[in-house]
Image 1 (cartoon, one colour):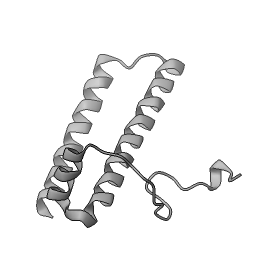
Image 2 (cartoon, one colour; image 1 turned 30 degrees about the horizontal axis):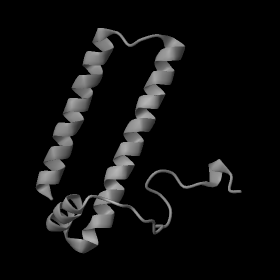
Image 3 (cartoon, rainbow, N blue to C red; image 1 turned 90 degrees about the horizontal axis):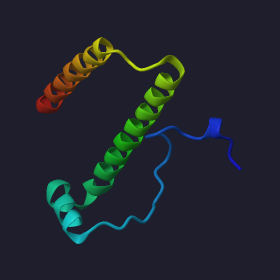
Image 4 (cartoon, rainbow, N blue to C red; image 1 turned 120 degrees about the vertical axis):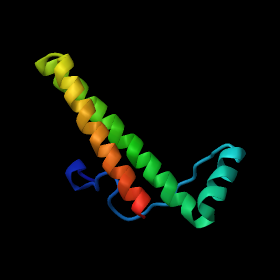
Length: 96
């Protein structure tokens, strides 16, 4: 059995081939958007984003259990920081 500490993190390590079933319309839309060769990269990016979001949510839940709920001010500050980061990312994507 491989120790967890030696396991690659999200988005790390060699690619592994798995089988994933998707609705036909979803597959068609994916291939129209990125072509056959880009499907794996897009699916990997989407899954990695989902896993990171779930890990962040889990961490925040644990933090609030240990330290109490975030205040309205803390939530507003986090929202402002997040919004600014999304705007920067949108600019990077637009630049190519």
